[in-house]
Length: 294
Image (cartoon, rainbow, N blue to C red; front, side, top):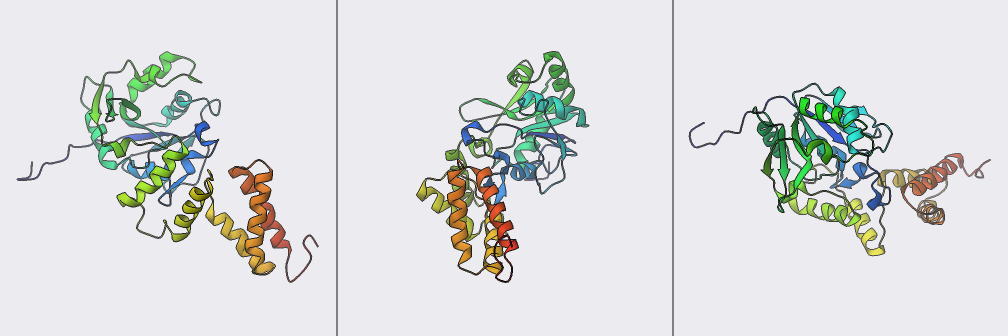
């Protein structure tokens, strides 16, 4: 120990597995790992917390990420957390693996390092974060890789199996965690809370990720009661093409029509994306006053 300073526990190498293949039923099927909090996707926030991992394996559909990861897919797709874990474990090389959900906006590297350090000693199979109510957060934990592999193999068929059947019998150290670190986003109310808390906690990126446009978009959504993650870049790209190829007033008018079309098709992110695509392609064909489709 340096005089007057408490040294942090030595952290050996570890890998990380992030489960990002859930159906997000309470979010109406939205791509939960891709939802933005403070201008950064939930998945990228979790990836930032495990930046010290030797290898990061993400189980779920491939998405753009800010860090290099190894992608695997659970079998069958959507087969649940144990199926995702079973697909990821063959790609893990370290003796300790951090297992995380992809919806933890405020998980910290410090907590990850502590879990890894506590998972290392002999006689334990890992270390799990514990929330303020004393509940084990089994998707915020560090496990001995060989212990997880043995339990998954013993389970047999992984699809649809609950994760507690895998980790329940393991001898784990229980590590009390800060409430913010274990906060997850299961509902739209959770997502809104995370976005609000991100600004107050100063966890938004220093660069202009949280722009005035994003703040305004959130305010309009709350005022209108809209539960939708808006791809601002895609909307602005469509309006840019419409304003350039048609005329400037075409941009807001086309945005209105895109929203109306998406709503008439049942709403949701997929309907909006398709309507944006169609409108953008139409605007791209409308050059120098030519008739659309000409």
